[in-house]
Length: 109
Image (cartoon, rainbow, N blue to C red):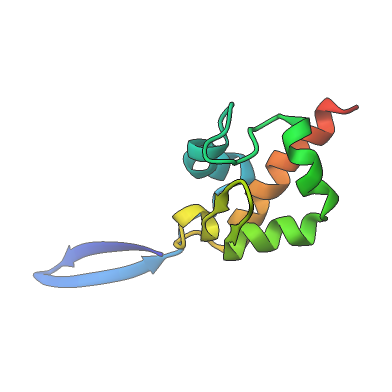
């Protein structure tokens, strides 16, 4: 939540303005890129690497989303809960997963 503070006639006034949610691409570019930028870090599937993503996609979107939201430790790497950005909404994280998977699907067409 974004808090703006203003001084009004010598008193302190605060108003809460909801921050605009980031798109999936924005979340990827600001958060996920640290691990998923090619070639991928610590077992993370690299962005756009269909072979690395295939076994994960085969588990289904519900599983991918669950791992992104709640974290996951696999045999070849770790997915931290929300990519260690617990300040992001579930919807923002889901958007990032959908964005990354969507890029694989676009390449396969």
